[in-house]
Length: 308
Image 1 (cartoon, rainbow, N blue to C red):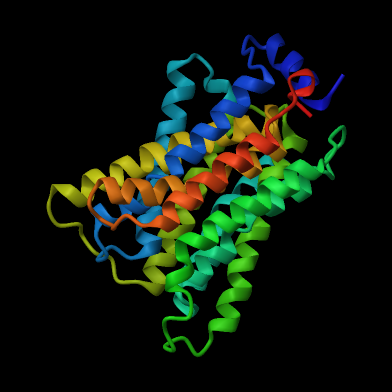
Image 2 (cartoon, helix red, strand yellow):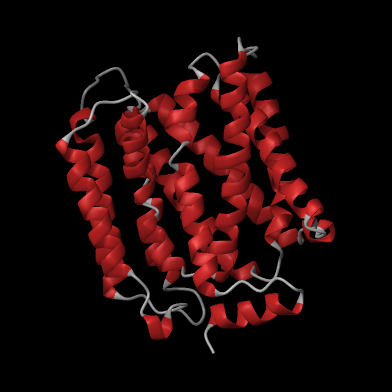
């Protein structure tokens, strides 16, 4: 019996039957929600500093996850183990600290592309999990996804000389990729801990981000309804629900395949920006979409071993 099958059986005992296929679909739902980050951030405006944004959205995200747990009659599931709590803080807070520092020290396009290596690293690290086998098709699929992400930012690379500490920024961006990929894969090692337990790490992340905001930023009161609505949607979706269902995907679904699908996020994000009139269409997006579709098809789980 595979690791994922054992997890599904375990979950069946507490009344939550989620098959590996459903868990993988939920994990991809997180990728779709993360695709709205750029659009919602644009609507939020650039006046609200990053740590303040993190504090507000993670507070909303924590409330969202807690509300889901309570309304579904699983309030007790919100209690994490010491290991899962430490892992949650590591993944949620440390990632964002490194990411914001990377964007401050290095050009956004290059830093974001390096940080996007988390998807490829997730695929590679998945082979280290007990009961998992890394297939060549997963690696090739992830490389195609990386090519798609590279295409989307290619024309922005090397466009600025205003970052004297860019090298450090790139190192921090790679640190982002290491943190998120290792956090995602290690979630499988605490698969018996309910995903609703992420509420507490979200609240702690919000508190730590608030402290960082007081130390390093000037607090800005959002002006008008639009920034508040954008912050609310960020907290409900890309931060709240997305982290919950990504955790389910990592704990019960196909880790390697979700790593490949992670590269769909920047592609869908660019398409959404175009639909909303916040970006212009280009052939690079068309090619990127084609690459992502090929990658997804190539890395798709075999029907007789979908949880591997």
